[in-house]
Image 1 (cartoon, rainbow, N blue to C red):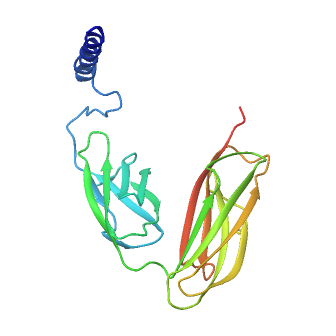
Image 2 (image 1 turned 120 degrees about the horizontal axis):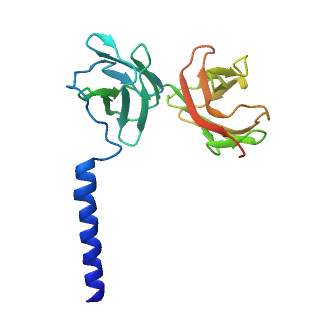
Image 3 (image 1 turned 90 degrees about the horizontal axis):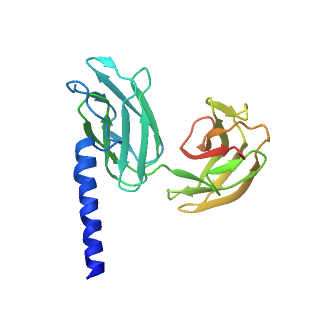
Length: 238
């Protein structure tokens, strides 16, 4: 009986908190309208093929480019990407859907009604896919990054392409400046087969802290058949 009363007290206390605190003051993470909401005008591709894309969404309000709108792309558990629009009203999101379906395109902005649309993902897979897997997404200057590269031939014929990698550092700087961290290697993959290898990179002690992109490419260099990207962070020891 004592336990039952105690649980009843907890239940009442929680309900009071929900009804009085959240209902009156609102969810602290909920954006509030401070003006009559306007409409968003969004432009993006209605259909794309499977594989890597730098998918661009342009957002306008009242005919003018809108900065700071939040764009989200989602397709099952295959794609989930978010980005804010820049001064030109553009958000560019790196995605790589390998399944078909309708990708949700959702755009929100302060004092605007939400935009909800879709983009159809269909078509065949690229002839050759490249996949990069890092052993972590957080490193420190002077440590070693271990990573695997895997090529997959999706055709019934032998495929031969160049493979190379590089890194995009904070400030959108390419490392190394040549654009080739590994390669370009000329590799051949048998029909419907895969080829993989393990590599490593020692991070310089002077590498600045921040967010980096590890980029892997396959194709008739400089053109690409497929791209893969992994995000990692170089953090402070403190």
